[in-house]
Image (cartoon, rainbow, N blue to C red):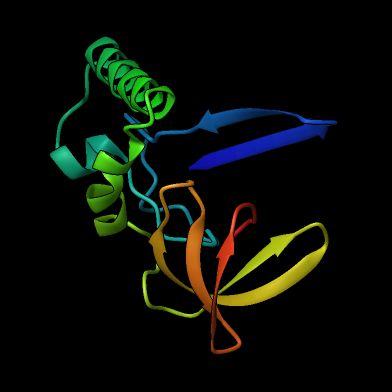
Length: 129
């Protein structure tokens, strides 16, 4: 899971992003989840060593951030768009107390979500699915 919180003061925007990964716990038998979930242990059939996983995750995030700072983030768009959750499917998102129905299409070079809303293309920057 991913959670991002941001605040804007004047021309400055700050954002904190949290990532949660089910690693060695049992998730597949948990009921009443909004979205199906599984752990890496359940997928692999064996325990996962946490330190190599953390090391790889941090290295990958560092590469993405470095590429973003160098205006090279667009090289990652094909993979991000391949993995886009609910691509082409109608979903609801919530932001600032408002619920909207959208169809995700792809990510843009500005890290926005291109989607269809009421039959028209629009971009979404924040929201909870």
